[in-house]
Image 1 (cartoon, one colour):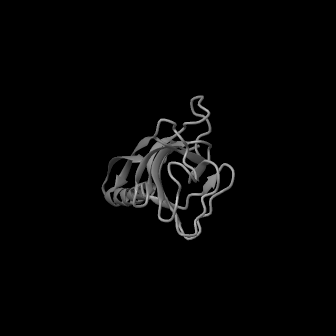
Image 2: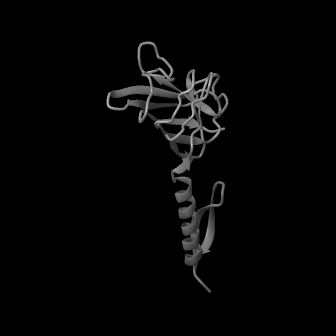
Image 3: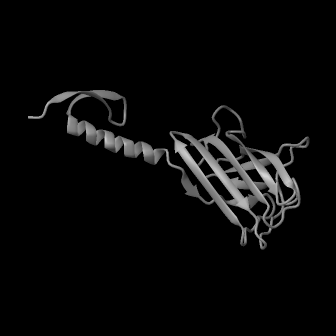
Length: 174
């Protein structure tokens, strides 16, 4: 008979003290390590890109995103880079979230999550941005200037080939 000793194990709830063999403990640790690794891995998603009046069309540009969710906290990295056939729509832009955001945690209609970003005007310069959740499925991107203008086809500059919108946002999932 194998020797058994006490161990604190997480069985999906509070820690429980159990008597286990060394082999059982090693198997448990291997499984838990795999679960933790899976939960803390960046996942790929393709962000949607819309506008208030008429949606942009990515054409031969690229949309890429990555997110990680730990518990109910979600952090998103995104990049939208224009190509030569990209059209930019009309109205303020919205970027889709990979996981539904909490609807209204503490009485705020907006501002459930925050982040930052940069609009890169190819060969000209960069513009700093603030990202914040707007609905449970999308976020706004706003230029850090005196007018706090939302990013659109003409803000913070007239967008063209190879220009890119990049950022990161963290929010609470529903």
